Image (cartoon, rainbow, N blue to C red):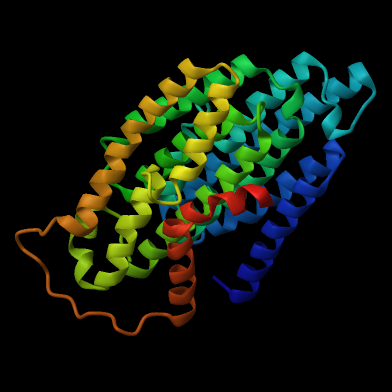
Length: 346
């Protein structure tokens, strides 16, 4: 793709995200979401492969439907209350429609079908944008309207997302699909707590975005898309593969690593809200996704295939991304000890 065009699309993405998260009026928030959708479409379909075109079409159709529902929800609320302010979403029907629209935007169950397909058809760098920055505006809208959302509906969506994200990721061999189901599972954790402690949702999102960015950038560096190629990739940059193992375990939420922090805080908050059964259920369901993270980790470092292909070790990698990966990996693995400081900031 032309670098100038690429720059325009990236700037439009940032602009759309900024407009949505900083707006008070529903029409401005909707405009930001539309700019985002239109800016990411060329980045999805830039390879001109039939699968990429299919992914872009699926993405466009689902996001258009979700944007129409956001507009419909805000107009219904304005009709009944005379308010266009995002924080004044008080009408129950409007909040129900908005929850469905945001679930469709994010890829929460039962509106999750588009996300694995779109991620599978996109390049790794676009997949990174889809999994992180494209999730921020819908989560910001949920954050601003969290006081008027339906707790039962969101808890149900969250538990279903964690369950299906775990189950459907078990049998995948394509790494991008595994990461898509991992994203659906993590969104379940964010949705379950948004009403009771919205700041925890944001903390969970930031840490998830950081760990996912690390994994996508690492995979992009070692040029791996399938589990079978991941098995032979350890010979390229062994140290990077070892760090990928730790990042995957952190994303799974194992205790000494950064990923354990949001899970621990969410379980603690749910218990305080007398929702111990929900906390138990969502913790048990996260064991499903732990299985496929462990399988990825196993393929990354522990498996030695019988016919190892000979690779030259890449001692000279792209320096700017190497520094970025080094910083992100360190943060993805070592932030748990400074969690009191993180909590005071949040």
